[in-house]
Length: 135
Image (cartoon, rainbow, N blue to C red):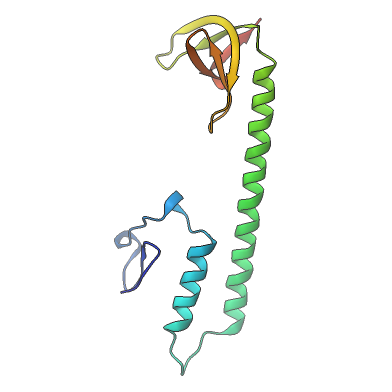
């Protein structure tokens, strides 16, 4: 059984295979390692069909393009969220906390976060999605 970048391959069903690659999805390095392993272990009397290989490469290219597009859209969304949050500095916001309670306070600053902009309200950090009202 071959182990390529944390993905165990062989005669196993989907529920028997465990993945431990970072991010839970295959990246370009993993794809290329699997492709090389497939070519090294193919039967020389029945080589892989070149049209199938081209099809796989085309699919990989499409997936890679979608991943790049997704990263760009996420960056654009985070930028827009941060800009909107900066506009709230000096304003009073009403927000809901994790326990579902409503609070109110003045926004004194904004901090970036991988999940979105965080407003600094007193000593509390609030995601813009928690804001109910701005005045």
